[in-house]
Image (cartoon, rainbow, N blue to C red; front, top):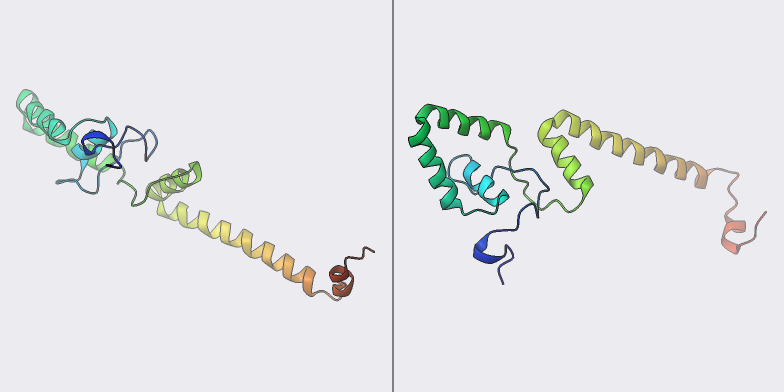
Length: 138
């Protein structure tokens, strides 16, 4: 069974929430494939619509729109986003890598402080291992 449903297309919004992403498997920046996957439309049909748009509006407006979409759309994540936290982190990472690095550092510092408190509690002279191991309360 094909994991992306009928005709090899994945259902709309199933992997990445409600935002269209540029596809990593696209020919030129992946805009047409990303939009086709988002709207559950065939890639050939989306490319055909782009070509028809070129003939109807002229070359430069469609090329400018395509390049603008390529700049504004984020690249498709490498792995599926399974939770809100994953989606939030990916959005923060693609928006600003500095912000994502600060977020990772903040989480690391928080864990470091918790481990330090635990070590200080367990290694203090007041901590009575015999009483804790034998299950006797003070």
